[in-house]
Amino acid sequence: MLHRSYLWTSRLCGVVLYSLVFLFTHYFWQVGPGPLRGQPELLLFMIPGIVMALCETESPLKSTFLMALWGTLLAVLLLNSHLFVHDNGLFMIAWSLSAIFWTGCGALLVRLMQIVMTSLN
Image 1 (cartoon, rainbow, N blue to C red):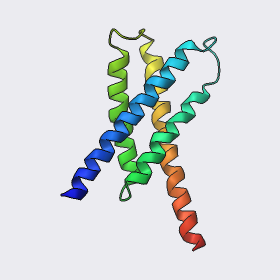
Image 2: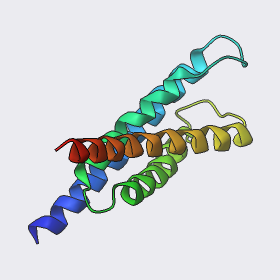
Image 3: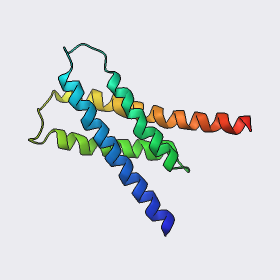
């Protein structure tokens, strides 16, 4: 029973962390100069991927992907409320897919480091 509650707690914390990073980076995405510029703030999405991969040992990539999907849904719903400025929907979809990609890269980075560390021992 303890293991099951730990899984739900870690997944919920992952969704909240991902949503906070999404909202934070969206704020800087709005403030930045001009429409055609690099977006290095997308690299921040590796942080929730790394945290989720460290918490979930059985299936880190699957749990990270599900966390990113739920977090994206929550953040997009919050962004499309009356609190924030509305954006182009197609651009938001592309940006969300890029965020999911970078989150997966963070989980894969943890998996790579685990493989390297076990091969050294």
